[in-house]
Image (cartoon, rainbow, N blue to C red; front, top):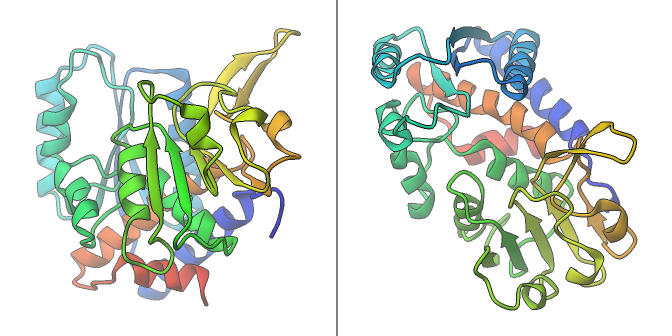
Length: 302
């Protein structure tokens, strides 16, 4: 097993396989990407999505609205997109204005076009182990473990973070009765007592709490596998802007059996999997029904 679990070769593999699928089926999957306001970090991510889409042969339709765009107007845009048969996937770039009702907005996105897995129906399917469109970051963790042939079945996995977009869905995905899951999962959060005792018991520790360098060497056991989902912007002593994860990479590196870097780790895979969801949604719209396992096997086993 590699010491550094880089996401770059996996992202490259995923994109290569997606491009082949698109070329073979002669479809052009179409994504509607909605952004409200001009948050610099969001704009950077949107540009990255556009670049990947162009490379893969997907059409990315950018709808960028001013910061004062209303919730009712957004709901109208979503309703129109749901009915537009030429649009296969809808992505809503966060953050949204603080006054918006995010649950109502998520419920408005068609589950069949919900490529970022915001709709509660798609989140519920995870718990029931039903096929659907899955959240990209948790799926990126699953793919990374599978790509590097890290055994998960029967292992104790500790997740720090209980968000609805990462921690909760990931915990349920790792509980699936599948060969690449079947783990024993503990979810920790800000009210967890004896946190360090729990993290030191983990065979695989996944940090997804959004606090830079939160996990330190004394919080992990020797030869554990560390998966860092966080990406945080910090300013170093020289005044430079840097991106770091939720795990203190330098202090944990020697003690860990393997570790994902930040940047260049899980985040690299996440963007690529957005397009896997888009292709899956496009296939379904053309009555080609393939499960997520079909796609993962195509990408990772062939």
